Length: 183
Image 1 (cartoon, one colour):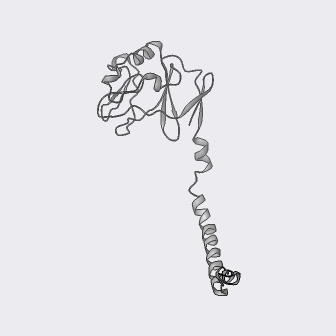
Image 2: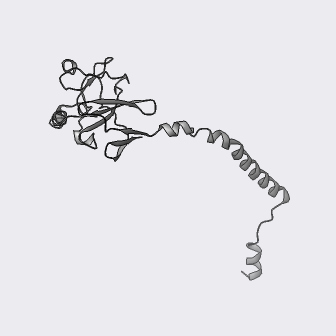
Image 3: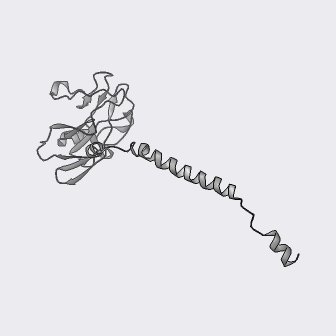
């Protein structure tokens, strides 16, 4: 094959003016469509007040041992319990084999004395009853759901009832001594 034949074989195809206009118009329509849809897509982002409520700072320095505090985080009540040494010991010595959703106490807390969990039952989402009296705290010294009668221990683990998982733990971190960020 000669050089002239090779050059003829590898020549660029001729593009007509009509093909160019069709492709250019398609590109402009695509970019215009994306630009027109962008405000709709951007409206799905959370608003400033939702972003502001997604993290809360809680001062725990005034919560005494044995006391419980409830705070609202993203329209969800969160229980903060300053556990006593007896409650910590009771939560640690539980036989995990007998639990519905086995989880050691150390996996549920960042600091032993502070338990931070959601105040909703994990079965039907009912609000848990905060038990204060020693008479009504039950066998496991924790909480119970008045709707499904699930019982939770001092670590928020389900002990009895139809609930199949422990109380939810929100994302949180201690930033200073006695200050926690939830969210």
